[in-house]
Amino acid sequence: MKITYQGETGAYSEMAVYKFFGSKVEPVPCKDFTEVFESVKTGAVPHGVVPIENSIEGSVNQNYDLFLTYDLKVCGEVAVKLAHVLIANPQTKFDDIKTIYSHPQALAQCRRYLENNKWEIIPAYDTAGSVKIIKENKLAAAAIASEKAADLYGMKILARDIADNPSNFTRFLVLGLEDAAPTGDDKTSIIFSAKHAPGTLYHALGEFASRNINLTRIESRPTKTTAWQYNFYLDFEGHRTEKRCAEALQALEKYATFLKILGSYPRVI
Amino acid sequence: MKITYQGETGAYSEMAVYKFFGSKVEPVPCKDFTEVFESVKTGAVPHGVVPIENSIEGSVNQNYDLFLTYDLKVCGEVAVKLAHVLIANPQTKFDDIKTIYSHPQALAQCRRYLENNKWEIIPAYDTAGSVKIIKENKLAAAAIASEKAADLYGMKILARDIADNPSNFTRFLVLGLEDAAPTGDDKTSIIFSAKHAPGTLYHALGEFASRNINLTRIESRPTKTTAWQYNFYLDFEGHRTEKRCAEALQALEKYATFLKILGSYPRVI
Image (cartoon, rainbow over all chains, first blue to last red; front, side):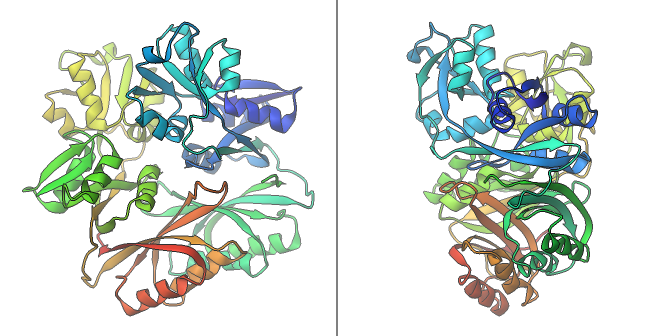
C-alpha cells in the first residue's frame, strides 16, 4: 500500500508512516503538504500522513489550513519522538562548519545549541532534505535531522542531543476519504467558526463540558476572509457516533456559523 | 526616543514603530526578536515593537513564547497593512529571475503567485533584509517586501499586488517595563495554564462571559515541559483595573495553575 508524506526518505514524516501502517507499506515522498492532500483527494493513494503539531513549536499552520480547504477525513493519529543530530559529510570536521541547513521547526528546536555556535542558518524544506542538499553539493556545512537520515545518506554524525528540550514529539494525522470506525477509545477533530457575539466560544465549549467530553486541543486560525476573525479547531475524546458526542455536535450548530467534522479515529495520545 | 524592532530599515516592523510613536522616534533595528525583548529588559530602550499575529498566517509563535519567558509588559497595540511587491536590482528583468528571497511569512502570503511561477524559494530573516541581500550580492533574484523597502534600497518594483489575499494585516504589540493607564477603551492580554480537569477551560472562560467581557483572541501554545499540555493566551476588552476585569482575573485563579497578566493598553483593533 502506498502512503504519501512530505519530505525526503529519512524524514520524521516517513517514520510516522511506518509507525502507523507497519513496515510493509510503501511511503511515497511529496515535495509539499498540498501534494499530500491532493494525492489522497484524487485517489492516487488511499492515505497520506501530515504533521499537525509539535510538543515544543506548536501547530503546523499550513496543515491546519489545508484541512479547512480540502474535503478529506482524519482517520488516525500517531506521535513520533524527534531526536535531532548534527550531520555532515564524512570528510567534514566540526571546526569546518560555517552553515547549518534544516527545516525551520528543527532549527527552532535547536535554537540554544545554534546560538552557542556562530553558524549561518539556512532554512530548508525538510530535515532529511537538508542532509541530501549538503551531500549532493559536497558542502562543508552541517544539517540537522534524524540519526536515520544520517545513516540513509551515508553521512557522519558530529553531535547528538542538540535539541533545547529532549522531550520533543510531533503528532501526525492520517488522511483518508473516510474516518475510522469506533474502537471505544477514540478522538474526534472538528473545525467551527463561532457566531460573533460575546460568550459564544464559552457556550460552544459548554456543550462538551456539560456532557463530560474532554477537550484535548483547541487551536484558532485566522479565517483569512476577515481580519481578526478566527476558526476554531477542537480535538475531543470520543467518537462522533457516540450519543454524547453526536448530541454535543448537534448542539454546537447553535453557536457556529459553520461546522466541519474532520473525523473520528483511535486515540493514541 | 529609541524604539527597537526586528528586521532591517524598511521592514514592516519599522512602519509599526512609526505608526505607533510618530515620525520623531528613532527606530533601532535588531537581528532577532530576543534582542528586542532584551533591549527593553535591560533598559537600553524604553520600548520595543514585535509582530504577534498576522490576519492570514496567524500567530508569530516565537513572540508568544518570549512573552512567557520575559517579565515585560504590553503597553500598546498597532496594526499595519502589508502590501507586498516583487523587488529586483534595477538591471534585472522579470525573465532573469530564478530565485525569490523573503521572510517565510511573506513567502506564505504570496504562495499562489509563487506557485504560478517556477522559482526557487529562499527564506530570509526579514522582508527588507531580503532586499538588502539581493542588492549587496548583486543577485539576479527578486525579493518580496514593501514598496518602502524598494525605495529605500534604490531597487526596481517588478510586480505589485502579489499577495494571495489583499486583506493582509499584521498586529504588533508594544513592549515596556509597565503597561498603559486606562483610557475607557482598552484591551488586556494574559497567559494562563488551566488545571488538568475536564471543563476547566470552559469554566475559566465563563468568568469572562458572565461579566460580559468580550474575548478578542484565544491562542494556545505548548508548555514545552510536558508534551500535549498548553498555555492559553487571552486578549479581552477592558482594562485590568476595571472592576469587572479585576474580578474576572481574580476568579480565574481558581482554574489556573499559573496566571501572568501581560498588561492593559488602548484598543486600536
